[in-house]
Amino acid sequence: MDGIEQAAFDTDMEQLRQGGRRGLLVARSFPVRIDRIGAHLATNWQLPLGLVDTILRHHDYQPEAQNADLTLIIYLSNIIVNTYDKDPELNIDLSGMHKDAAKFMMSLVEDVSGWYDGLIEEIEGAYAFFLEAD
Image (cartoon, one colour):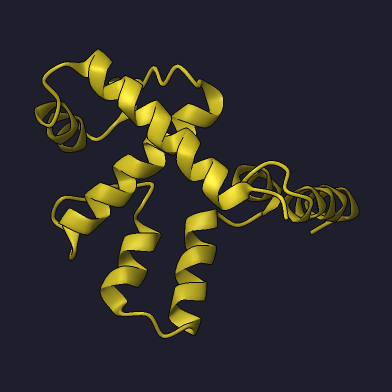
């Protein structure tokens, strides 16, 4: 990292330590993709190879990959949380999603607006639980 990247990374890390923004800020500061960093850490921690592969592919769903079902869940969760960070109304753009993932997601909902309302409450509750300041 050059001096500017290091300064941005240090600022992001300090904000996280103080209970500020979530990992998206830190992800912005890294010159390496965050999924590769996660897979590297998972390997170092000797997590099962299927989980390492899921972490590596959580931005790029591949239905033919090992552990495709788990990867699909993480892939969709990632899209939902990242969408919520940008738009708390949770207007998900299905066109940018892998077609199988979009089909799976839509098969789970009968009334999309009711599902989204409950989902927003769940995400806000999870953020409050995990990010409460001491």
